[in-house]
Image: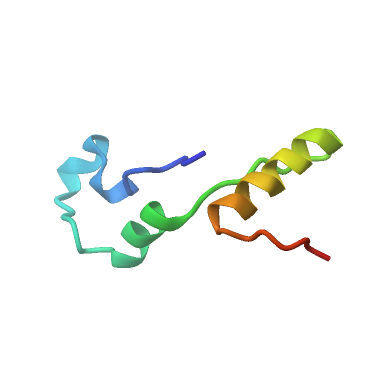
Length: 66
């Protein structure tokens, strides 16, 4: 899940501050590149397997992991 697809400084609620794209490049890059994974103690083994399989498939990893 992506929690913040638009950096806080570019959200309409903060437009009055006058921030513009490029002003906070680290924040903007993180919004484009960070992915939040479902991680909590109540995940079942099947759910964990699904998450790992999906991530490995995305990156084209086919060999077994240790």
